[in-house]
Length: 176
Image 1 (cartoon, rainbow, N blue to C red):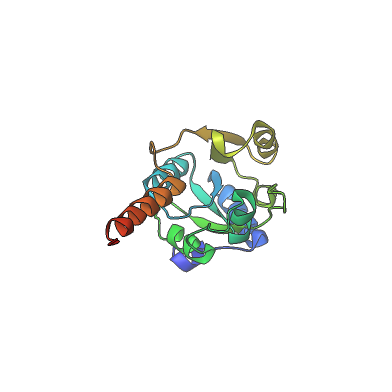
Image 2: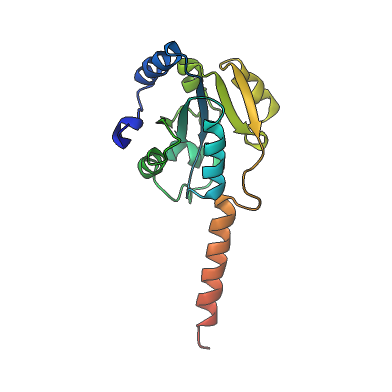
């Protein structure tokens, strides 16, 4: 499948595509995330997610949503269009869509799950509180929780370490 055909932001069209796959007997897996500064933990996670079924749909949190729920104007580092495109190049990702149905208080409306009703939704346990996991379970066949796929690897940690090293470098070169 061509990369540009993998990015489907119209949920109705995505629903039609996933229904066609289900008609063919394929199991649809869905997951969502920020995917900011794609790293090895993300790729291991997505690869494992794909192995749960046949078709992997990856939701990408919009820039606006990330700013809302992370409550941080510095994130995301990578714009949503680029994050979607990077994910579309991954061979184990079948479809990429944008997740923008987050309220001002950071609550996710789960529109994608209501539309495609995946066979499996995968997440890490720390991504969602129990109440939200219970709600997610209503819109998918089964919720599967994964452990983090790379110890001590998170986008926030990478940003913090990089910034700290850069700052140390700059300070060490200042002549007093």
